[in-house]
Length: 59
Image (cartoon, rainbow, N blue to C red; front, side):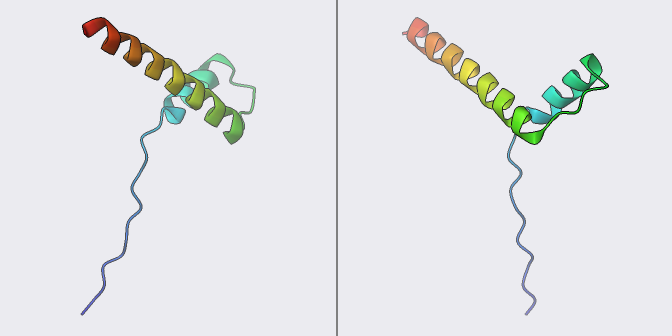
């Protein structure tokens, strides 16, 4: 019997979109992975805050 290869699940991230926008705005600047991770976490925290406010408002 052949074993199937295990595939890693891809995590959804805004980092690709953030990277593209920042490279359009600042094409001559290099971006570190750490900076993109921080920006992604910041964006996620903003979205979570908005969702919490919407949940409270809908009650």
